[in-house]
Image 1 (cartoon, rainbow, N blue to C red):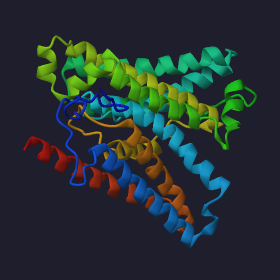
Image 2: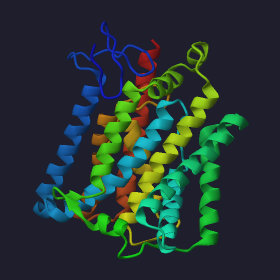
Image 3: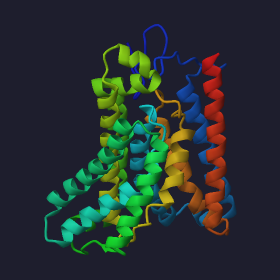
Length: 339
């Protein structure tokens, strides 16, 4: 028996996390491999096109800019993927979860607490935010998109009331870590890679992950198998909150000063990358290795836009267009699966 990073495979036929057969395309490639090749090809084309226009695009500064955006977006994308794969649609409050966790981390450091204490505080803050969303969704039986949109606005308002900006101590261990590099890439890039790998392994090999997939793929069937849907739904929001809390900690490490609205720029990248990676809004399927590629592609767009000499707002235009295309592809896949 073989197992992909996220999708447990049946010896007779590869299956998606939702339990539906993942048929190969006309070339015999699994859908996830086809998606990975497509995204990688478009990403390489973007890099080549930008390099032709501006040969200095291939520089250390560009690499650092792209990997910085990838680092924060990638961790947040894993958080979003947990919600989407579990059938919870989307969490639109992730930018607030990011900043409130970063705020808690910085506040702890500014009050003299050591880094080994401040980091868990940031992660637990993210978990608490996820629990708040989960409790409202599960026990209020409300639409997750509406709930997280409302809590996102509410959380932003609370932060605007209590702080205008936050600043990490310049000599704190966390700040020094954020300034460092390993193998030529920012230190915070590697926690992102580890988070994606561990997330994929958790979905593939843990009971929690398999139950989350089953719930997202077919909730009534999962309930019939004895899975407590309320507990699993609440757990998915808390787990996603913990991952978003880690993103907040990493964000505080590399951002000397930030405001409550600083996380807004990650929203479109995260949602677009998740859907482009084939993590279906219908729940129950997706591949986190493909997610790594889609995050890299979306993170490259703002830097490429700058080298093309266009206004930064054009990055939002292209990312938004790609999001629409990705949603269209997801809808087409859902129709094909239903046949």
